[in-house]
Length: 295
Length: 267
Image 1: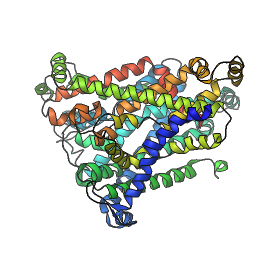
Image 2 (image 1 turned 120 degrees about the vertical axis):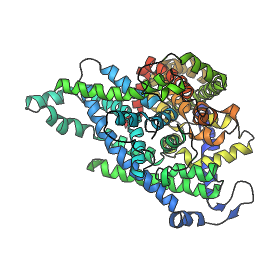
Image 3 (image 1 turned 90 degrees about the horizontal axis):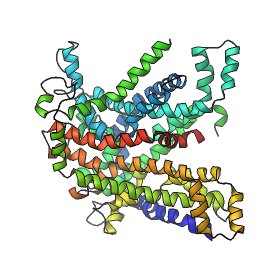
Image 4 (image 1 turned 180 degrees about the vertical axis):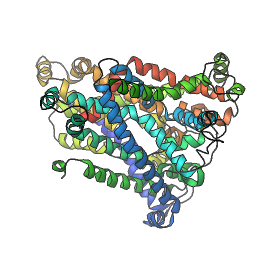
């Protein structure tokens, strides 16, 4: 009796506040509904519309993938390097770790504000410095250009996650037995060679974990682009210049709560995103996991 | 080589700190001075800026955020610990299924059910309050998973058997034996839930549109509309909402790091 009683709160709360909404959203995605009037059952029409007649949705998917392609490799490589260097420090290990995790702890809202200030065309610090040192004649339109705006968003994500990647890698490094390194040293391996031949392969599982989770989180990118464009300048423009910063969740939120209340259609976006997350996380697992682990 | 590594580490660490520094420095200036030059050194206008921020609803919003995070921590830790204990230390029909259930729930992103959740909350009559932002934490899949692992690893089953033989009741065992032993796990989970609920932006953004229920992230993202021109005051508000969390983190960084790495290294 007791184990059932102990599990009950969790199971009941999950059923009530997460499972039920997930199922209800699926039902909604098969309807045309604006949140107030009557629901009309339309089968899978929302999905058809979404995938074949909604250029903005396709563009938002594309944008999200481009930004992920920018930040995932950089965070991964830099995070590993940073972890490797810090791990072999004699002093200051803890300090470097703590400092670099601070961005990860910070509210994305603050990050959005600070970055939209830093890269503001007129008042932003980056342009002020560039002009002052004479590297450019006139400020760069960081947030008005499709590629630089995506790059700034990627930079925000990198800045925020680098420390997290670093401590995850460091946690993985503590698990590697030290005698492996001793043996390598005896065999005449050192420095970069040891890093490439021993450290990296042994951290494979950690890398797989990081890639898969950042693919999952990356597909749900929202806070950074939304706040970059709604922060400093206080604008309510959706999607950045020509929608190049529009991500899938942003599109979803916009369709359902900001510009419109097309709940049925938005639910179809949410479910398509869910599907994409499943597909991409499996794909990224397949691509990164060691061969013998693949089933 | 060693010096080069140190230089790299110092540069990266400085880059990590730089935006915080700029934020704090900007909140110590008069707004007009921010645009005269490049603000690098702190000014002496911090008091005034803080005063401006406190004149707005900042304190109430702070209170809202604290309410949400404390309630979220209490709920999430309670339900996660109970289910974790049941799965880790009892033999019963459906135990395997329950464990699989917890793992599967971890894989469903909350956004998928977002619209359904909001409609549900409206039907329950708590649509535009703090409840939706709190209740979403009532069943926290990662928490359940974490607690299953933690309780399995840290509590010897013999100990529980002994207590049972001595006639201790099941709730008594849970409260007086299990809870004291898993205190470090509770602390780790609590800090994580606190952090995540404190920083949550999407959910309060779409559920709350009444200013007196705003939480910090939503309030700050709307500051642009309130103090359109007072950039320094906005930075002061940002400073006030981030710095306490950062200090809390630095004080408890050991627990925090353990929590952050908990999911990864176990696999």
